[in-house]
Amino acid sequence: MTLWLFLHIAGCVLFLGNIITAAFWKVRADLKGDPTEVYNTVKNVMLADLVFTLPGLLMIIISGGVMAVQAGYAMGEMNWLMASLILFGVTGILWAGFLIPLQKGMIRHSKQSMRDGVISADYKRASAYWAVGGTIATLLPVVILYFMVSKPF
Image (cartoon, rainbow, N blue to C red; front, side, top):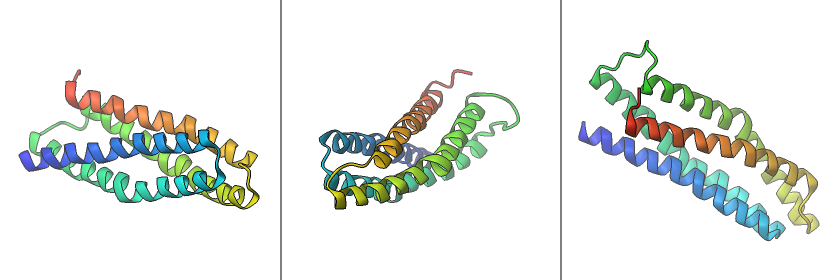
């Protein structure tokens, strides 16, 4: 159980740490307004998702599933675990259906902006949507983390 718990916590650190850090660097690049820096940053945000967020996600799912089965948690009732799973699913849908396509668009728009020497309106629009969706997709795992630690119901 200790190994699974370690893997679960390590997965949470990778997952949450990367989504928060990536947003920080993207916001900094956007504020600076240098098209080349913006392009490089949004490309690296996507790379960091593959290198850190995805492995963290897999660690969370696998270790959490094993620990839930070992602990004998009932999956048919509403408790902190079921609420966490629902929020985790919503977060995944938000990332896969909304944020990843926006990130691909931001890469494409920022590449064109880099060529033109000015940040385009298309990039700014995609970035604004990403900021709203990303904030929601970051706050939901923070709520899940609270549920995991406190087990309030």
